[in-house]
Image 1: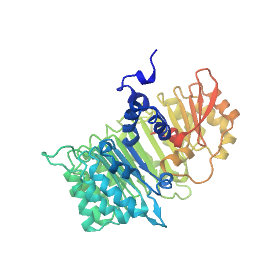
Image 2: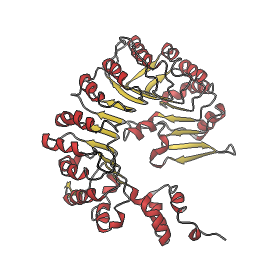
Image 3: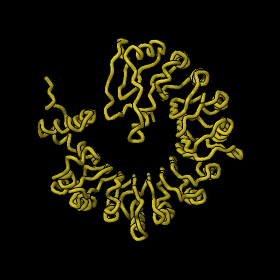
Image 4: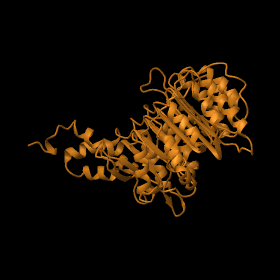
Amino acid sequence: MVSADNLPFDVLPLIFANVPGRKDLLSVALVSKSFNGAATPLIYGSITINVSVTKKLTKRSPFQTLLDRKDLYKFPRKLTITAVPLDRGRVSERFHIVLAMALPKLVNLSSFVFDAHLTVSFLPALLSNLATPSQLKELSLLADNLNPQQAKLLLHIGHRTKLDRGGSLQKLSLRSPSTCVLGVLPEWIERNRASMTSLSIKDSPSITSGFIQLLLGYTRYLTHLSLTQCPNLNHWLLMKTLETLPGLIKLQLAIFTYSPSPGATYQLTCLKHLSLHFMGSLPADSTPKLKATLSGFLAFFATCTLESFMLESMDQIVLPVETVKDWSSCLFGSLRCFNIVGVTILPDSLELLCRRTKLLEQICLDFEPEMKARSSLLLRALSKSESLQTITDSFDFRYHHHQGAPGQPTRFTRPEVETIFAQISTLKRIINAGRCWVRSSECSLKAQVCRHRRESSLT
């Protein structure tokens, strides 16, 4: 009889990779030496320091363990820091020192995310050591307080000469970059132009369309572009600049003004995923402006085959039926995932979308309390879809992607969920108020608590 201890060692990591929680994985590592050897690379492969973790790091951090055990140097591949432990109300200097010492030794580190507000003053000391890992491919930084000397340290991160081992940066994400960081950004991207495939800039009021045009001139291989919270960016000038990126697959933009398009002079034929975030407030009777702006954007994608489309608004807006009709050329034939957050879609518009979009599998809607009054109309509209499998509450979507959501979710009761499943025969799951309702193979219904709300993500 075959037992777990008799399994080939190469099989154990494949099994342990399906263990859902880190706590359970730590328990697995204590079973035997073979289990420990297979689970250890998974335990240290991805290290995340967040608010909940910092409360447990008052005495010892995982980086001290890495320094004490040289055999662990090769395992960490992804490091994410969104918070740091405090010592008497101040940032722990010990944590910073140990982290700075450990970074140069993580020879296989490929992803580094630093998004902790309280430790901006400590970031410059880490940058010089961050240039050491030769396999670094992904970098995400909160870089709002870097001075000119500190910003120049960024030039040494990621770039590799032909004689160096490893590669250059492939994904770069900057949040709140300072003026000094923006000053060195063109040269930094130019050094990594042969490998850069993803660029994201967030919370940068000073960035302009001309500056973005300069950056995109160095990134001919870019496939992912995200520009959010950049109010001085002219989105129509940006759309013209995207002509230099024929291989662009994913685009995320924040729009602060509503105006008609000057005209689409080219087509982004390779685009598969589009996210539009409307940040500007809309006055009363502004439906024509909204329709003109949406139609103007989608005119650039008339010949592409979009698979996912997200439409988000800070102000609650109503999606006109005429606007949905204009989407037929670029959405109805290929769309699989449709997320609408902060946007009210009328039953007639939703029915038109579901009826014509034959491949639609996932949809995200606002489950507001007032929606229950017209839920029968919405359910009738959703039932027109031939392939819909997942419905998500936009509250869960916001919670997952924005680290929280205002207000309280509208919680569906079991009878209400049963009614939805009964009317939509193809539906497999409903994600609402932190719970994932799943229709099992026996046609029974069960609710699962979303672990860290991972199931609420549709992208």
